[in-house]
Length: 194
Image (cartoon, rainbow, N blue to C red; front, top):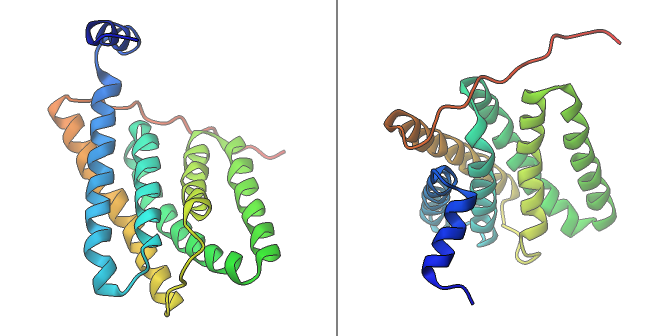
């Protein structure tokens, strides 16, 4: 059994400057802010509890990948993640109603998100963002379906946008105050015909 001093020594060995711990604190704040938003919206919009699970999964995974985002990546995230969250919500409904078709579309979506990674750093980050709501589909319980599926889809997209915006504000504050170093700009390979 490790004692506290030995645990601290071991943690400092792997994270000597505490950068990972500080980044984790920013991720946790992103998750808590998004969860608070989802808690506020859920009863007002009549959403099922699984919308909270999706919000937490998307925010926690986003918090992990957003550490390397620059401004362009954040703009891409504002466009890609809400669309992916809406698609994930629709996919969840489809899996409940037509399991074979829903499962096939899930596999195609994940495969496409992984295949796009060959187009460079930005495409890799966008593909990662698409996978996040698909992972949430796996974690959301197959319980009650919302009475108005389109409203649920819209709220999922809005919640994903809130997660991106809240994470952006927190990451900006962390960079501005020096809590976390700014990431280098992503290298975008030139377009070549093959």
